Length: 246
View (tube, rainbow, N blue to C red):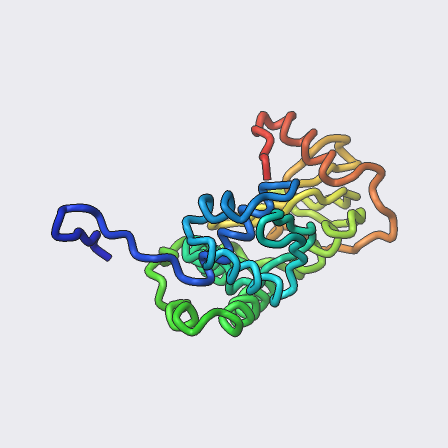
């Protein structure tokens, strides 16, 4: 949409939707650990005091535990999560873009899961956003198709979540097959391949395994001795990869 200007040359900024406004109020309440006055909240969210009181009542009706009253101040009890309908447009676009990438590049199980997730989001979006869900102009371009896998990648994801060791038969680039016990740490998706990051007991070090070269896989009942996040930090240090904040 092209920017609009008034007759005096000032830029016209369209008003926020109600869902955006409630989301902004929720974020403002989360920033304050102590009771904050309605005046301060109104200034932070750019609304009138009357609108603020109505929005607080709306959040309370949706399940948010907000303590306080006019003239005293408000505080939000931790733990309340808004449904996806409260996402601002940019966050919905990010979700749709990521979902479309997964649908194009991931394995069949994730492809089905992401389509189901988008359907759930669409079911609870406001009508005006639901109509736009499939119309966002953020598209995923064509890319090389990953090499087909011989194993079910959902097995690897379950092992990652449970921090379980894996027994695998692996064929390297020269065609030689070895049997190893590994500690899966991360599954990386590239355009042309998927790579499992793991600690290899055979090599006593971090190794990277292309999933299309994993011929057999079996999940062990044994958990590996360190937490996966700690091992991932060690792997990043070894590989010289900056630590991520999120």
